[in-house]
Every structure is written in C-alpha cells, then in structure tokens.
Image 1 (cartoon, rainbow, N blue to C red):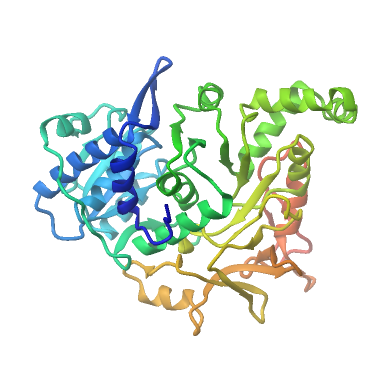
Image 2 (cartoon, rainbow, N blue to C red):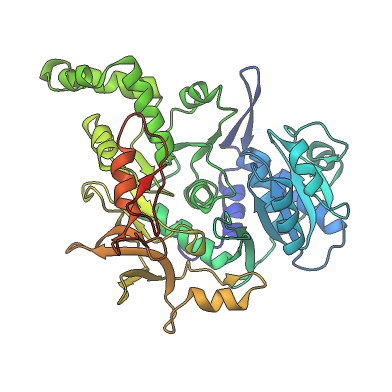
Length: 465
C-alpha cells in the first residue's frame, strides 16, 4: 500500500478495515500481566471516546491536553481527539505545576487526559479548575471520569472523520530551555510526510516489534513510534517502569529499537560493570568466541533480535558508537527537531560515518548559511509557533528555510556533521572563542561521566561541570 499520500486518520481507518483482528498494542498492567489491543479494539475505543468528546459540544478545533507516560490510551486518545475534530496538546509527564499551568492556559485547553504519572500531586495544582479531566486506567487515584466508564457507556462514532492536510493536528510545546515553552504547530500533512518518509527510508514493515518508552510528548518518539506504527502496521509494546525495563524488553524482543545517548551509555556501563572493558575487548578479538560473546551481550540487553537501532535527540560520542559497532549493532544516528517533526537527517545502514548524523531524508532541502548555520526545508516543517508571529518570523529565512540554530558541515556524500550551536559559542577573558560541544562530546566518552556542561564566558579559560 502506498502510504505517502495518506493522512494519519486515513491510516487508522485502513488498519481497522484490513487488520481488525491483528494484535497492535501490548500494555503491561502490573504483576507481570498485560492487556492486549487488536487494531479493531483500539480503533473502536478511540471511536467511543471521540463520540464522547463530540457530546461535550466543545468549540470546533478545541485544544485537548494529554499528560501521561506512554500507554495504549495515549495513542487511542490522540486518535479520538482527531476523530472528534479537535487538536491534541501533549504534555511531558515530568513537568512541574507552573509549566503545566502555562501550557494549558496558553493553548486554552478545555479537556485534559490524565494517565500514568509518578508525581501527579505535584502537577495537579497547575490544572485550572475549568479544565475537564478524564483519567486513563493506570492513572493515579482521582475522582475524574474514567476512560473505561466512558468507553463502556458510549456508542462508537460512525463513519470516517476527514481532516485536511493543512489542518492543525497537534501543538507540541518545546522544553523551554531558553524561556517559556513555545507551541510548535504541526499539521496532519507535516505528520504524514515525516512518518511515511521515515518508515519508507528504513524499510520497516508490519512484522516488526517496537518498545515504546521514550516520552510520546517528544516528536522523536511520536514520529517513529505512534506515527511509525500507523504507517507500517508494526506491533507496539509499552514499558511498565524503570524497575521492569529489562523484563519489558525481553517480552517485546524488539526488532526496532530507538533510544537516546544517556540510555545507550547506561546500557554500555551496565555491561562493563559485569565484564571489564579490557577483558571484553580481548574476547571480541578471539575468532572462535567472538560471535558467541556478541550474541550473549546483546541478549543480556534484550537487543539480540534488533535489526535497526537508532539514537537521537542529542549527539552520541564516537567511542560509544564504535563500542556498539564492535558488538555488531550499528547505531543509526538521526537529526531533527520539534519544528520539523524530527524529520531532517538520518544515517543509513552501511553508509554511516562516525561523528555525522546522516544524509538528508527524502524531500528535505538543506544548506549551510554564511555563518555556518544548518538551514532545512521540507513538507514536514511546522506551520509556525502558536500565538507567536514574531518568533515564527524569526525561525525562517526569507526563502522559507527553517533556522535550526545548529552549526554544521556537509561531506562529499551529503552527510551532515553538527559542530555546535550558533548561540552557544562564548569568548573567554583572553579573547578566545570556544565551541563547547566538541569538548563536551570528548568528556562524555569517559566511563565516569554521564552529563557535562562546558562554560567559561569572560573567564580566563573554559571549565566543565
């Protein structure tokens, strides 16, 4: 099936019609038990929740919030919001009350779905009294209307809701590292282009398995997990908790696995605590046992079935990339941002180059500005920032390229290397300009260092924290 011209809801209805009885999601519910959702059941529950949302008679295209750790209801509620003609606003499950309050007020959310959370008591004061809350099955104790009750008593919304490619689908709030979070507006067309392009580039199909554990509120997970499953039909598993993560991995036996540098490094350190680095290197050099050792290490991590492994959201040190490559696991780094739905660059199997984040994905134009800034343009690029025309104008060049804020260079094969941030370069009191990123990456390769920040503006020399 050609998915390149299909919008997300069209893909939902496609799987409902063609794979209703096929298993889609596996959700842990505690004590080693799981709840399983076929495509038919998942779409039916989404239809019922959509009918309920329509019964509330909210203004057309209302914003509806969603705050939860990853779970089956997160995805089904996203679909329900779209089916009901509204716009989803995901919130990170680790936000404080002040940020929750800011986002819900800024987006003018009428309804909030509340799910699995570790610190709901801390967040709850940030929810305005006017916001109607609906709780997921695994949410903290509350007196809200529940997902299960609503689904049980509400007839499913019939027919197929049609949403246009140019319509606003979701508002993704950035982390706010440089001030208040900005609301990135993404259309159904943006989402469709990014998801279909990424899946086709990787050659992913319905027979794959994937574990969802990075926040779905982040575009990295949402593009390649929620939307990725829609555009390929693969089986999605969820993680229960950090304590059960190994068991969750063993249950899923993923063939696709995405992570972030911090966790790839954590996995590596876990192995090296059991087998010292020098000993492992010696064993890997012995032809007779080399293959067995690689398989045993990857099986211990729950990654022995992985065919494609990716890393994103931050640079990964060359040493860590090489370490996994020696185990037979090629980590494909990618590059993107909220403003282009994580769709920009990706390494391809057999074409990786250490220190580079890969080639431009299909449909992405890229160039380097006179000051060395990476500029990109594609149909995945955002509509703009919600309620902020000034910031939107600043984000684009006159010819429509998105300013990434990253410095970079492109090699002869079109692979991109990130060399720092445009605004992060600082000057010491001796007048020397320092780019902290290369220094931080080198320090991060040390086993004892998990996170590092290099600074030193107006001081005699840079220092690391």
